[in-house]
Length: 415
Image (cartoon, rainbow, N blue to C red):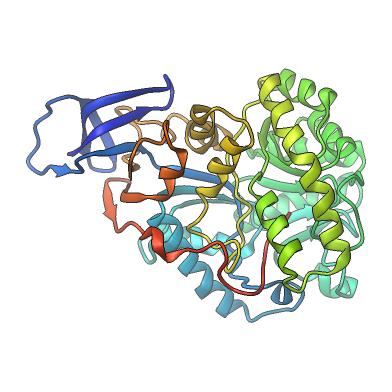
């Protein structure tokens, strides 16, 4: 049994006082005051929350922009990604959605069978893009790019259907596609619309027929609208939304994962250099100017917003600091309770596991996090994780001192 001074009910938005959580096996058995148990974990003056979720991140093991443009040894990348899994769990992230990494498909099983500690992983495997699209490695010869395991390049509706089938054959829990260019891809722009409406429709129809949701990397207006109208389940990034975009998203129930803390990463790398080329820093400046408006438009329209850090690896975007995303959402204008819902129940809804994760109730997974302080009053207390339980098993929390936003001299992130 776990006891704490406070428990946040993220559904109702209320803080309960002096509540006990009884755990049986890997699920919550009962919640209430004065419960009895053979073993009591008394957390004192702390706040209990559901385990955190990050529904847009990458377990690639990359550690620099230079590595991003090379072909690093994949065994080394896998070891680093396993370290990132440990850091995520220690920071309170009990469930994550990897939006494009072949390594994550294997890490998922290693975490599930207890070989390595880490969060529950939902993996897309390779991202699907058009030739010359965002997930295509523009700097490599086409034949080499097509052979890379983190993307599937497809052109035409039937090739797009085949790519969906290949991703599912590889073990994809959901399908990740790219319907616009991106900040980090060299020969396109976030406002470029990728895939034809027929191609997107083929991907969505095939994925849904096979029981998989579809997440679309979509930054510019045209690619967002094309994806939403084709029936994708979530828009990732959405930097350049307008009133029409958010109205369509709200009407169709399309989720929004704004990866909002990338603004901080963009600003740091612009100011610090970090070896990024001019074309990339230019696109970062443009995105920074647009992202705040898009977030507020989506919130005001009633679009469900979930946290996705787009973290990729240290030094500037180290896994373990992923709670910076809900903090950034609150700084960007979301009420603290909405930022906390984005981190928990909304993120679970994006995954389709809201009946098992994202809130504390009997029958849910026993994923619990305790933080020092009250996150409704000070959302930055999400960084002060003092206790982590995943599926009824306690794991050591991280020390807030281990991470620094200014560490290192290079950067790796996808956007």
